Image (cartoon, rainbow, N blue to C red):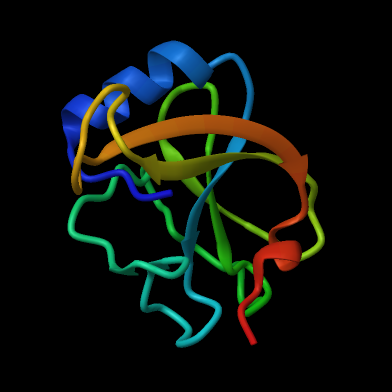
Length: 115
């Protein structure tokens, strides 16, 4: 999933802010360079004050949205609910119409590693 702007962030917080969720943002590939899993560099961020931080431990590779809507760095091996973004065609639309759907599931970030 990607979070592109403050409007999308607000919607996610309103609908999923009752729990901490993994957003799909990671610096697993290059420490300190946060990117969306499978979708490139983050243009918009909503880090909490002092975040992202690794406490000197490079295993803090995964961003999660806490119930306050702010993002925090989470450690490899922590369990999170995850927001998954699915693309698809608009109902009744012929051709390349696109629509995004957001769903959530329980997972560990390492389950989504590429390669």
